[in-house]
Length: 87
Image 1 (cartoon, helix red, strand yellow):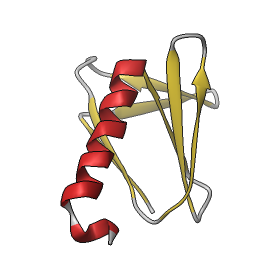
Image 2 (tube, rainbow, N blue to C red):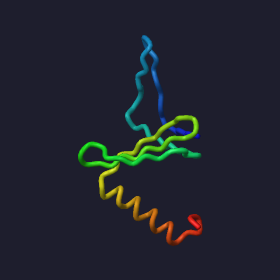
Image 3 (cartoon, rainbow, N blue to C red):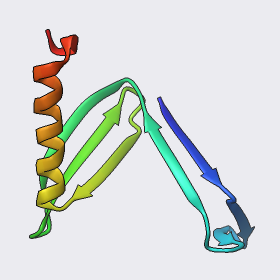
Image 4 (cartoon, rainbow, N blue to C red):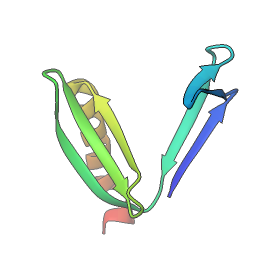
């Protein structure tokens, strides 16, 4: 399941094309549940891309710099050591 919450967002449909209208102060929160697939790969020459896909085919991709990817890996290792979730 993919949930998208976009604050202060408005689209204009004109001649078959969408255009964002209004001020550029928009914020979005995207959440994905029931992930079926995860893929980790190089992205360009300086980033790591993590892609998540749910059972309905929705996909989220996140590009991280190596230090950010290492922080995610370290956080997962710490959670695995300290949490009963991985038992």
